[in-house]
Length: 211
Image (cartoon, rainbow, N blue to C red; front, side):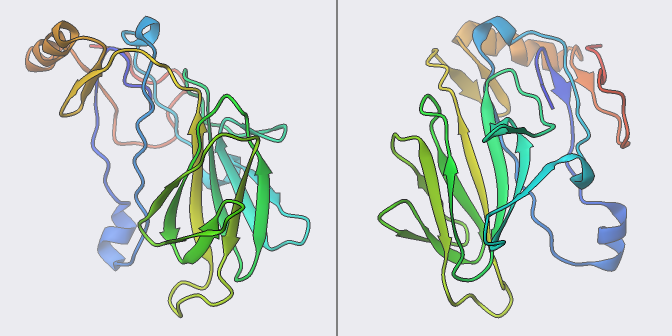
């Protein structure tokens, strides 16, 4: 979803899950827009599991889902105006994978389930932790040989992008470049100038426009 000039949205679990119960991961990632794109028209993408790029490590120990950006020539369906790469990786116990990474991108790893290590130094990470990588042209992730009984694999999200390096002013859900722009965003919200995302799937790629 690209908020652009303003978008009202609510994330909620599927009705079937609400009725039957169960666990799921909800991960919200905010990708900042450069100043020149801050007021572009809002846009919404409905990305299903069948549209992501599926890759495996040579030994089959890791399954990689390229959600956005590009990984070693394989592009994910997610489109962002700030160049990023987002990969959801599942590693079997003891599996290790080293992925090529753009040197002009920063990089981090967020653990959704399981235990493992990151980097050439094998820094330990576990559920709920985020690891920030240093500079380099690759990212290495390894799953511990022994996982908890309720989390058989290491589930980890690898993220990175090209830094914008622009001033940033933010408050609540609004992210702008200056305090004046932030105040204007609040006024737009209060006066009902923001667009909306209908609570349906299978929308057109153009999505809703600003009201």
